Length: 143
Image 1: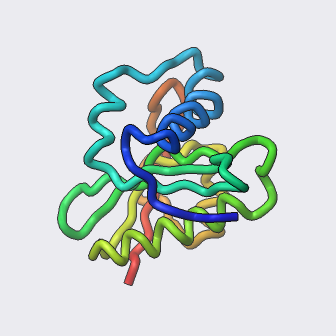
Image 2: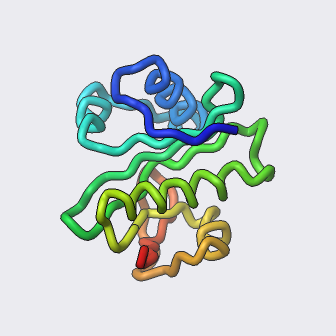
């Protein structure tokens, strides 16, 4: 498995959008708008590959000079439960540190809270609904 930062608008990025659409949006009857995708040019795009096939991804959205928000974490159903998500999170944390961030935050789906807690993230706010599902704000210091 290879972990790397990819470029917005590239072929790898198109694979990323397709995986996120398949795992995160279509099951909810949602799609990405052109505006949402265009705004991602400011994000750090992180992906895991097997051969040249993108199998997991997430976006890192700078919130300010110290905090980055992990968003749109998606792992292909073929590799779920095989450590790919864990490897991707660890890589995303390293990339975040390399960019000078000292804290990572996210809006985690309630169904994923246990996974993130195992990775050292803590819930930092009450449950709320986003894209029709219950979520929690979670965060982790990167120092």
